[in-house]
Image (tube, rainbow, N blue to C red; front, side):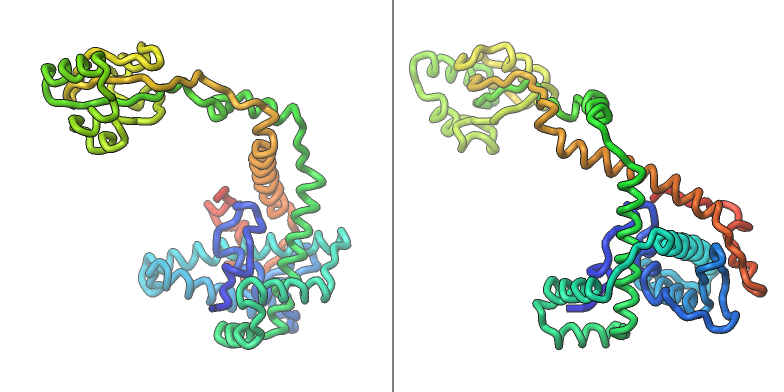
Length: 344
């Protein structure tokens, strides 16, 4: 089994960043600053190094080329590369901002916690087979020290996002009730009927079957022997429950007008002639608030978190003190048009 980053990382940023960001944001990001060989400084405390950026965009380029067939030598490919570079820079800046904030908030991930995470990966993906794990690491060119850095950074970001959400996103019962009322249709089961039918080609056949039923013959047996509907005849003509709008109008009108247990006169539709027996009825039902509250809370919370994080992300990038080093001015996302962070 390959040691894939997809198995390592979950959607930390609640869907607000592009898919490749989760690989890019974690691999080899804690690089020691080598002299002044850096692209940008963020808030004077974090740096994006040239080495870091090259490694990340090289990885992403390879993934895109393989998955999407992009030729970076073509004009379209060059344009795609520039877009990729801008987006990656934006996401790297955001990562550095978050890591800096995590330090200020004194968020710490210990070596023991990282070790526990590695053991979890081994158990879940390699059945605790240490040899298979090491082979996968080697195949993917990931060293143990690098993996520790990747996971520590990932776990730090997770803790920071959890704190950010807990401090800023609150859900009240009033919020949930408003959402429940707004989406009441989603929690409503429509009025429905249960019915069986016998479908034949002519009105004469249908009348004969109707008279046979009135004379006491078994509806289900007549359906098996006479119905032209292959989907229901072997089940005694049973169609199960259906609500309005699921059947042709003539069939629906006749069925809903019957009493339970009553059999209809022949009903003509575009399919032929039907003899219908109504076997059940369920009135419209609305699921009570208490029954849907837990699932509703999860949905509302996720929506509010996504909305909050998007606004927070945009402001954090806008307000950050990002200084690009000499020679790397072309990487400055603030000078590029049409690169405002988007909802994904």
